[in-house]
Image 1 (cartoon, rainbow, N blue to C red):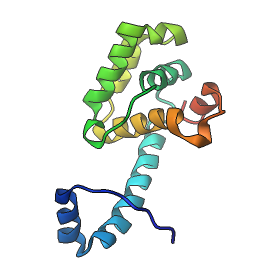
Image 2 (image 1 turned 90 degrees about the vertical axis):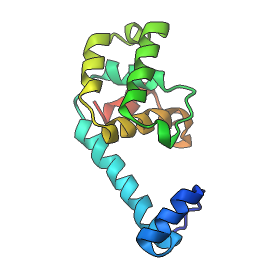
Image 3 (image 1 turned 120 degrees about the vertical axis):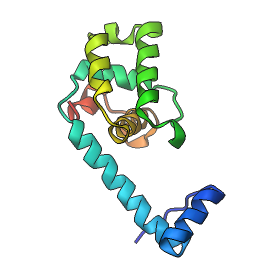
Amino acid sequence: MPQVAARVSDEHEQWLKEYFRTKSAGAEFVVPWAVDTFFRSINSIRGQFSAAELKTILEAHKDVKLLPDQSRLAYLQLRVQDACELGMVNTRYGASKANLEAKIKRLNDTQAAALMIWATAYWVSKEWKDIDMDDYVRDVS
């Protein structure tokens, strides 16, 4: 099995040791669980957003460094609201700001975090570097 090296805070290290006996045992559980949770969340929102809405969400996450403590619904709402109000991103892609905000509001924190991870991945992943935005959103819309 491939290894992954992760940096965790002292608090997280202690938590992993308390719940899983060792940091490694905890990481071996948490990392696959987090990936599975991401895909379940993305699949649960599949089809809820139009291509124009997903492009708006993508654009709202351009040049964003996603941090774990900022991966909540409130942050997604704020990023999209700012992108729409300050950059008129929704009009560029033909998305209704009101409809998009209503759909985002119905998400839970896990779904919002997955959507934010999905959106930032488009901009930073080498795998998607040469992929058109239309192709990227097709799997989720």
